[in-house]
Amino acid sequence: MKVNFKTVSFALSAAMTLSVAMPAYALEVSYSSADSALSVSGSNTSNDIAVAVMPYSYSPDKLTVGTVNNNDSIVFQYVQAGGDYSEEILLPLNLPAGKYRVSEIIGGKSADAVFFKLSDSKLADAADAMNRADSLSDAKSAVNTLLSGTDSALKSKAGDIAEYMYNAMPGSGYDEQEFFDSFTLYEGIVSLKEGDITFSRFMEEYSSVISEEYNLAYESLTDEQKAEADKIAFIDGDDADSIIEEIIFVTKAHTVGNHEDLQLLVTEHLENAGVELDDFDELSEYEQAEIFIELFTDKNKITGTDYVVTKLEKLIEDILDDDSGSSGGGSSGGGGGGGSAGISGGGYQVGTGTPAPAPTTDAFTDTSAHWAKVDIEAMYKLGIVNGTGNGIFEPDRSVTRAEFVKMLTGALGIAVSAKDCSFTDVANDAWYYSYVTTAVDMGIVKGVSDTEFAPGASITREDAATMVYRAVSSKLSKLSEYDFLDRTDISDYAAEGVEALSGAEILKGSDGYFRPKANITRAEAAALLLRIYNLK
Image 1 (cartoon, rainbow, N blue to C red):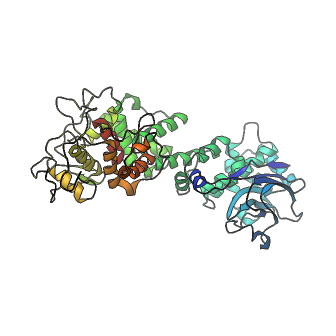
Image 2 (image 1 turned 180 degrees about the vertical axis):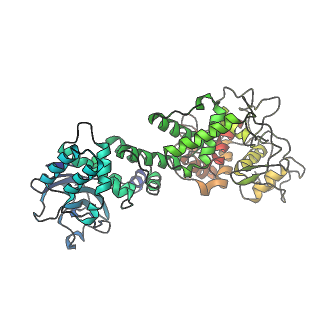
Image 3 (image 1 turned 45 degrees about the horizontal axis):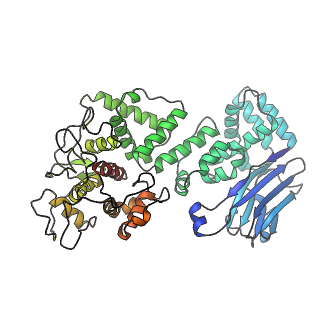
């Protein structure tokens, strides 16, 4: 029979392509077991190419175009200068049955595809036996039939492969092609389960038998996410699709940048899985956000859908059981003194004022329809911001430099204390004295001159970004490209911070614009600093 492999692609990341002008490579493979022929084709415009066929146990990682001809482990090699190529490889008739790889090698990089050299007659017998199987034991006998004559490493996987194939068998049974594809897929799944290969290698080498949906889902991951996927422990499931989906879901959960994005990810995932959470829709937006802030704090503990459902159900139960709406709250950002009482935040002591009662309905009368309502109420609940009196928050009012420093130290969980101060406009009895002097001492903020801090001046969006960047630069990971339409308006001293924070999806603009010289509002500050709080 003929086994067709989809294109196996190797391409540099977008970032690498921009900085190093190198082409993408593609390898197409088809194998006919009837005449032991392997067809390979591909294209490359500039580099020499080597195509090598080898036992799967031999790693191509150290092969280069120059060394492929001098290796006894290579069954076949084909080398040519850059350009289109197409070759039919007649494998040796005495080539043992087993697992092989085809590698396209360009420089020190390779793209790999897996194929199995198996007997056509054994394949037909094994497919028939699997379709007639009345038990898992019968299914294992079918796979053992297929693998007779192969090496012990492959035979040792027969039982697990058979179990997956038996459970995933279509109601009408397998035809020979479906049986072979299923065998190939679940041999890969078992190899992944046993730690023989990483998830990235599995997705590359077995792409021909992985559904297009999950090939595309994997390719949409960033390089950081793909690296994270390789670290995640195997997550078992009923079939290959559910296993791949769970690993990709956990990968995204571990690398998500803030609680809002985690909520979107989890909500969509559970909806697609047909999972409904009792009473979740009965919670307010504020309570829902509170739940996902808690889940985000422990995002690296997420091990799959079952963990998420169990965790969310417990958090929902805790909220519903708490008649007072739980505790928390505090002061910040609105002026006024900062007392010594504090709350624990992110593992640090937050030096904020006396906690205020958490709201059971809308915290403020002027935020119920505001775009930042959830962020404002979450920060209020955490004790990092407070209203300005009379039940209002004034979300669109500008923030002073002193107010922002207080909000920032609260979000960072910094216990403030009075330090020496050289600023002539920061009196030692001012409510913000401890906040400003602590932040200056830590190198987070600077004055507008050597002698002035300008505590009562409104703070611009670029200055707020600069303060935040100094505080959290070591914690940032690039998730997307920075590209504000007004980037040329950003001051040189602020450009690095704005780029890094926007690339980490901490800093956001509006309609593609950042508006660096505009004053940051209390709502914008609350939303920004909640994302900072969630970095812990």
